[in-house]
Image (cartoon, rainbow, N blue to C red; front, side, top):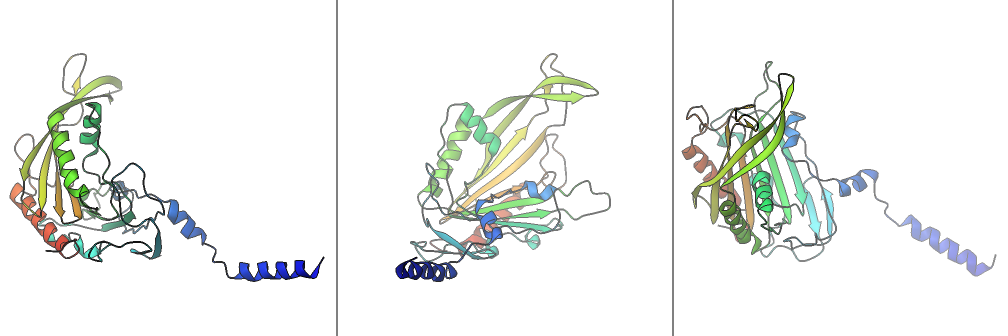
Length: 307
């Protein structure tokens, strides 16, 4: 072997010693996607996952950093242009706390993410798609979420959530466009029927369920806000029209924007006083509106621009 070949080998060895090889945990983190809301049924222990990405989602509403390096739990630094006023990541302080609710809560589950699509109501979006409405996803730069669980008791069957909240940082004007998309979905989906197979007392029936959506109140908090009321009717046997399966239920979803921050708040099952039969304990509409105003004030300090 020639002397210059030995010099080259030595040079390669020195260079390799300076290379930083990613740890296996870091590699797994890069490919991990968030699993929001369903985590509540799996564990009552607080979990904090970090997902990172180094590419821009094509075809979605997205802007901001395209090269992100995770530097710790809940912390990320970017190598490209930051948010207009320097605020980029979403601090944990923007999230609702147990003291903000008049209901008792148990464990808290937390999550953070990058380049996540803004999720409002999956069933409403499915209905809109079924009606031929194309919705370009609103993709966030950063996101943070929290699930407040019910207190655990000896008789608890699972740990259902009291409330779940997602906060997204989106680039203008996509926050404005999100509310336009909600209006479009409500216009084409005042009602929607879905079919399913239900197993009852050893037999399977083909059933149909009617869904109804309406904006209960708008403009109650932040720069833009809407409270969506979703009524899920009791399923009916398609062969005889008899009601089958679980009773009718009502769900509420709050969507609030302050600057470039959008939060989606969903009270858990059985935590609102509104029932199809007009009864039931839980949060009133006035309390839920006030909760939305509290959430909007929390967003102010981290929004671009602030308030």
